[in-house]
Structure formats: C-alpha cells, structure tokens
Length: 301
Image (cartoon, rainbow, N blue to C red; front, side, top):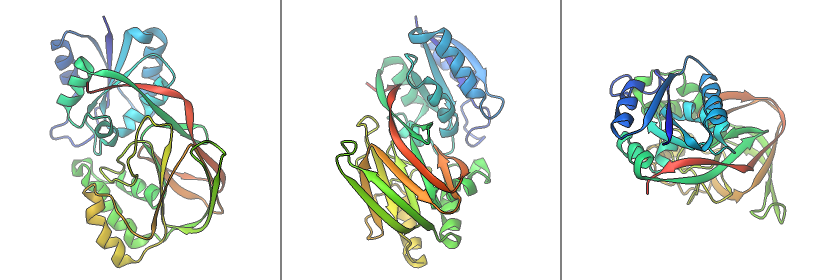
C-alpha cells in the first residue's frame, strides 16, 4: 500500500477556509491510505521533509502538499528525478500549479490522489535552480516581491493589487536575449532593448491566475516565454483587468516564444521570482532551460 506523507504549510493562503494538515490527514485516511503528517516550520523545511520521504519510501511513498505554490516549489525540486510522486491539496493564495495540473480544489486534488494517474511533467531551471510552474523577471519579479508583503487574507487579490502598484511605478530595464529554437540549437533569435516583463511559463498560469503563455503544456519539453516591451500607463491599466481574469492578452508589446533554452544578460540587478518566491538576480549572464529530469505528479484520470 502507498504510504502518504502530508507536508502542510500552516501559514499558506488565507486563514478563513484554509485546509489544515490534520483535516487533510482525516480526508486521506477516510479513503484508505496510511498517512503521516509533517508541518513545515520555516523556509526550506518542506524540502528536507520531502527529501527524507524520497530517500526512504521511493515508489511506495507519495508526498501530498497542503499549501500553495511556494511549498510546492520546495517539495517539487527535491522529488524531481525520483520515483516518488507529488499530490496537491491546494491551500495557498494563488494555487497556479494546482490549477495547471487540473486540481483547482481540494476535492479535485483528493480525486487525483485516489483515482487519478501519475503524469511526468517538465522541470525547468534558472542557473541550475529548479522551478516547475513559472519564473518571472522584471515587473513579474517586482509584483511577486510586492505581493509577498501583503496580507494573505487577500488571496489571489494581493497579486492584482501588486500588479497595479507595479504598473504605476516600474518602467523596466535593458536585457539582451538569446532564444534557442525548439530543437535545441537549430536556430536562435537575439533580442535586445528595454523590456517591462518576462515570464517563463512551464504551467499555464502565474501570479494568482494571470495567463501569459499560449497553449502551455507542462509536459511538452518546452518553455513558453512571454516578453513584454514597455507600454503606456493608460494601456497597462486597460490590460490589467483582463489579465487578472485569466484572459490571454494580445497586444503589440507582447511577444511569445517556445524554446528549450534561453540565455539573457542584464547590466543591473533584476527582480525575479521562482514559482512565486521573489528575489533579486545579480547583474550578468544567466540561463533558463528545461532539464532532463521529470517530476511525477498525480493528475485527474
């Protein structure tokens, strides 16, 4: 019998309606699983817990995350390349990854764990640091950084507020891009100049429901890159409501590419995020790519 380890972030998402680790254990036990509960205590703890499960349980174990994209990010980078699958019971602010694998609700996640199937999905990396849903630069990184400081009870709305503030204050910066063709180095495209936003999409949604990639597939071996040139304030404010509602934006400032590997160079530090976790990337040359290893996830049948 598969043994499930529930890794729960007790602080993910809004307090009201948040699924607790104990509730998740009860739901899974009721469905006949042997379940152990582990609560995270801080940044990086979910990774160490998942590593222990992968090392000891292997394909007889499963890690189920109760949390949001940040907790999934910590667990997924450890389980990638192992035989231990990942299940998700969404309990975060954005839940972009959960929606992308077809588990937007706790019920859908339970059904996938109980009656679904394993699917191998792509794992990507920025300078060797893995991510599974998306990586953003420039305004995207600034939005994640701003949103991380807001109250979690706002849910995905904190990303909308952060986007509005970023549109009003952020102007972008110069970046040089080298975009390799979909068949590795068969072709390359070089772009330079000032950019407002860049999003590398492995999953279809980012930033609490924004849809920046076109026909994104988690298992196609390709990154979906969306580059946005600077746009006027009025145009940006006009685009925001549709983007926040998950609609694809078609605008002359938006360019989209599919690639296995992208190199870029910046002369100044740049805000970024990995699966919604914000930071500042140092100036210089960097690389984003699809890795050879895959991540096993439980998806609906």
